[in-house]
Length: 498
Image 1 (tube, rainbow, N blue to C red):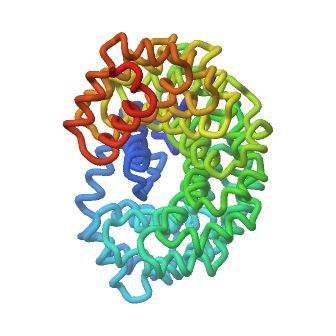
Image 2 (image 1 turned 30 degrees about the horizontal axis):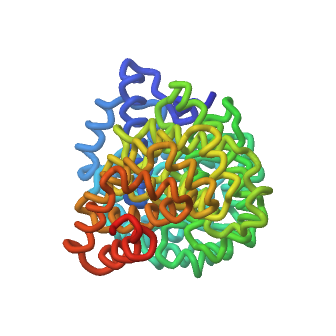
């Protein structure tokens, strides 16, 4: 099944600190993705060189501000030690004050561009490492200073060196969110076709695919992406490349799929574009992969990072369902196991990650809103009792569960009878007494559908002292709740009140 690759494509260190440093880096990247999952925040990535340990990093950072001017002057002169000086400069540029000092040197960026475009491959690599360190800067004026180098970084995306291409991609990705000027320049320089060509040429290189996905996701989080960026992406081959990564292949690793799933999530947030994505089979692809990874959760084979893939997949499926016509739904999602997957994700995360549980319930709501078939599946697969048990949970989860149950009740009177037999009435007695007015209103709507569906259901409700409950709501509540209680009592339960 899926596994989160050990990020072996990231440059490792053949030193005693190898495992510890890799672990810290994986944890840092996990935190970045976690922030994006929770807050949809842009993030930056820093790739470290293969021949340095933590002690060396600390020492170089401490000396960076002192040495950067000296290194800059040394690099202006020809000599066999230029590669060594560039390497030292890249490490010195980890120090934020040193970054500011460097860009204030006259023609400093043109010096780096000269090495970046030169014939010496080793100097090119060290030059792009310097740019990568600068792109990770906390200072907002650094990114615009790097603009003279971006056309060359885009050109090098068609190269054959994984390490070099990966550095170019992450550098571009770090620069993307820093300013509108930088984004406008990158778009004008052709970053979208460059990313499309890169993913096409490197589709079997998961390190580059992951980096390309990261860079694209940085672009897509721009506030004007719907107008300026998404139309260009949809007109390119990028959607098909992104979807091709969502193929259950254990050898491909989780990381590329996570990045591409987030890209698709940002694309689906613009509802007017979802028709195009549906034509690519995006709903079918995302739901199929969701079923696949959901199987790992249900079998208790959940692996590190899996929830970071589940979250964007849920959002993609939920958004695409909102745009999918009723007629096309069965062709887009042919696997009835999707309801089982969503239910199992609900149960697996309700205690540990309520946000993911709510996402799962939201998708289940969208799935059942217009489909009698999926509503029927919830009943025939005996999943409804489990949903009813979840009505006791708060934090918005019970609201979503009630919506799903309302969808089922709305489809057929026979479904209402089945819901009553599954003890939904007993659960409604509890939700009608909750303080949350939205919960009470939804509960009234579900109760109405159950009561009017069959006289035996109405009689059962009355036998369990339902009349006094409605009368209490009628006198103690206001607005919609009072009107609903009065309507039920006067129009459907009047014979029981005399």
